[in-house]
Image 1 (spheres, rainbow, N blue to C red):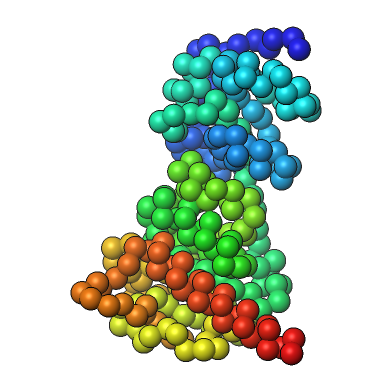
Image 2 (image 1 turned 90 degrees about the horizontal axis):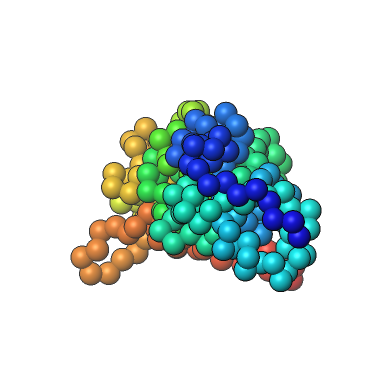
Amino acid sequence: MKLPTVISSMNNIQIKNLTLLQKKAKARKEQGLFVVEGIKMFQEARESGLLVKTYMSESFYQDMLDKPEFFRGLEFELVTDSVLKQVSDTMTPQGIIGTVKRLEYSVEEMLKVKEPFLLLLEDIRDPGNLGTIIRTAEGAGVTGIILNKTCADILQPKVVRSTMGSIYRVPFYETDDLISFITRLKTHGFKIFAAHLSGHMYDTEGSFLGKCGLLIGNEAQGLSEDVARLADNLIRIPMEGQVESLNAAIAAAILMYEAARQRRAADEIKKE
């Protein structure tokens, strides 16, 4: 295989743009691209057909030369290890970075799903929490995620890494007006549950059936009063000791899996 030209400067126009995509939500939105790092996220992007361009370090390239099938049909740029480390958003880069097409989903698509189960997020600021919530949502069978405009950017590098690939598979939609969105869902027959410290115990069998929306609020402040007021039911997780609340990602996981359990149980009864 003929050795490609090696990019060795951070002033290279492609590297400048890659850095911009790593750091700026506006650039990601305008270009319709986001960035993934590491072999797992790269491979999943490639298999999904969303991969646009690949950048790999010289050492990674050398390590892969005994696997010619890896390069088949792959458009890539070779960069020095130093440049890749500088452009990377991780402390210990694996040597490969890809640009990926920004995924677009419509609300109409989400509403067409039979008995949709939507996760509604208000002001989730921590990228690690948001990524973990998205990953857990896939595992719990959530059919779509709605984020308001003050949530962390869903396509920023740390969020994308934390999803461990779920970002490619879970439909999401960013709304400028969460209150109007929830109101719209209710006109479509959705029952809205909100995680809230003033809520009742959540574990009533058969609660989370049919068209269902689960509201999770900010890590420190919870849900705003205006949003919480729209819920059909305020619910809380039973806790022992002196613990008042849980991390947003953990609380979301518990509630999503309780909903998933109830929905599975109802499906089994239907089959009998």
